[in-house]
Length: 327
Ligand code: FAQ
Image (tube, rainbow, N blue to C red):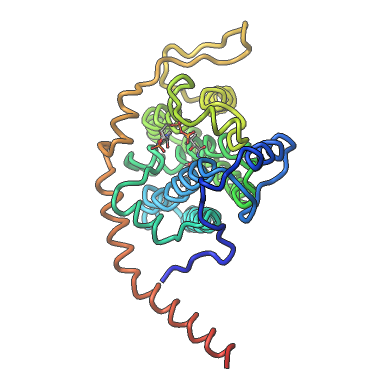
């Protein structure tokens, strides 16, 4: 079965946390030093990282489902090969992230159990259905685009294992974003029917993509502390604004229309201002009531169960290798 990471940090002992250690920790964070698994860290910092990194890992794993749905129906061999590689990359991202989260002293089984029992969150975006091939283009362009905007600053996160995992993840996400944009470009320049399909996918994915950045600044529970600890470098709204600024010209180039009648360029701020986001929908989706939440979790549980023999075989193989080395 899963093994606990060898370099897992010792368990948090808040009773041993003294003011001096905490002050030294904050000095190190301020000096842009990386915090590593065996270094002192306040229990709340450890908890925040375990929550965010495991949610991120779950998102990558659940995120394979909406696109995996189109592997057998990709319109050409080239598209199928690229989509297969992309979905496989997302799986790899989930594995690096679980490994990074395990260095906080929590076993992978525990994270997996939190996901399968429905106690853990994963990104709201993966609870929407992929109804046409254009959705695969829209996910690559918008969802991976939003993920990159959010994750580039995480390459400078104060926690070493998370920051290092993010460097590779971001390189791969850039390729994903380009493959999605290329699908959208092909459709937008194709027949009237293909262009309409691209527009329809954009209409359905635009608002959920903006929600990926999390609740607005005044309502974000964790932002203040995460910013103090240099886990987060920008607020949810700042990253959302950067994403909108980057995406508006891309939509114009495609000849598609963003589904927001209130979208306008504000010369005073130099940014695009978007219309109101439906936060009720967001809360509903993260509470488990989105269009695909139940399906996504049911599929994950099924796959986990049917993969039990692989975990058992891997554990038996590892035990045998260990016994051989010891002999
Ligand atoms: N969905 O106080 P904040 C990808 C929760 S990977 C669900 O602002 P925080 C690659 C939040 O957890 C996409 N829940 O929280 C790919 C908290 O709940 P809690 C995932 C959300 O952590 C592409 C509560 O609301 N990326 O796309 C969402 O400071 C294509 C209050 O929020 C990451 O995870 C949401 N959208 O900021 C894969 C990036 N937003 O825990 C396949 C790393 C917020 O108190 C195909 N994570 N919540 O119960 C982050 O940067 C942060 O965790 C945020 C949220 C920005 C997501």
